[in-house]
Length: 182
Image (cartoon, rainbow, N blue to C red; front, top):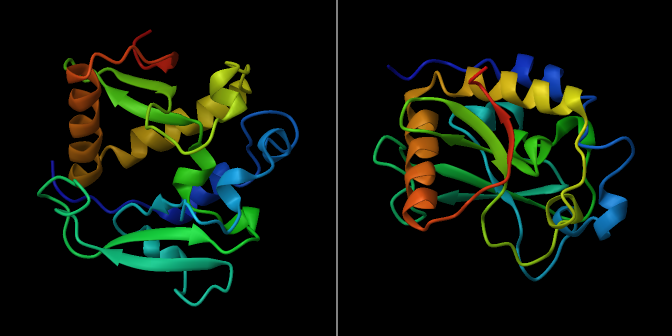
């Protein structure tokens, strides 16, 4: 598997009008992940996703990170882009990791893709995770479709595999929302 180019335009179009629940989930938590705060919350962009932005957006701050310093696999090259909101989010322009939350991928050793609730330790509580809120079926289906496309890029697959093995090593029992295994 090589560095396949991901068509981010298509993934952004697919996810543009899809939300985890009917209505704005930010109202449940006071938009904690979308506001400028001292925790410097944000998301990493996938390789090539930075092309969806000019880098001069006044609502996002961009940081260039070294992949080895932020625990990315060796296939990731400098720079890795980390972005965080400055207080207001243009929902139609938000990065994919924001669009997918609270779901994250987990690859089993047999290559079965699972979508699970995020297991990272967060500096806040997301009611969608803590209350196991029922997510929209169309949101889950679109998120799964996007992850299947993203995993064609070796770098992204390497990261998901690394995160999956780490979760397993830590003995985490994630809440499974979707499985590619029928």
